[in-house]
Image 1 (tube, one colour):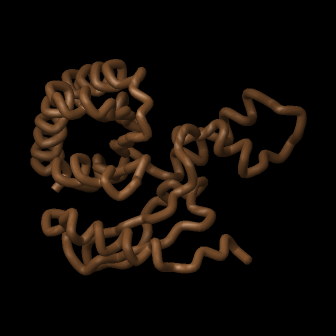
Image 2 (cartoon, rainbow, N blue to C red):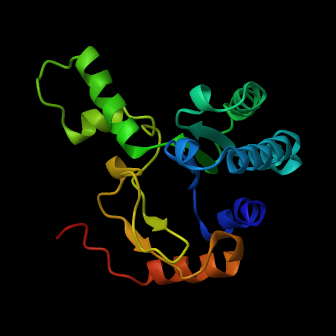
Amino acid sequence: VFRSIIREIWQFGVTHLTIWGLSRDNFYSRSDLEISILMEIFDETLNELLSSKEVEEEKLHVRIIGRWKELCPKDLIEKIIRLENKTASYYNDKHLTLLLAYNGDDEIKNALWQFKNNPLGRQVPSVEDLHRWSWTWFLPNVDIMIRTGFEPHLSNRALMLLMADTHLYFPQIHWPDFSIEELAKIIDDFKNRERRFGA
């Protein structure tokens, strides 16, 4: 599913795709066996991205956000750094961001800490200040958030600094059953919605 989505999504005019791979809390709540299997999957995915001709040809800019440097195995950390460095100069309106060991609370706390230690002449930070110091400072506001599965809710205040006018979709399928066809339906629905931006 991941391969299909990152290969096909750009045809819809999408410029930024963010996929939440694993939360920080999952590292502590899931079994050691499950985490080990997931790390193997992430390792395989990174190997594919590092060797992919499509990534190079399409100039896909890849970033990984979260506390992965603290929680992931050393060899996985090294591959993440290699991938980010390899694609750092790619700017072709195709940006892939992976959230790994990510938690929205962590991001907001970090932004507040950064603001406190880099004062801008005021005591209370604005939303713009927090965005400036957030891990996701380089991302635009989220247009569409898709949560697969059968539990229509958001988790860990994910990307909250970017959710001012986000449209939410909760397809009643699990991620392994998600498809580019399902994504096309969601994007088509989004394009036909009236966006009032709080008005």
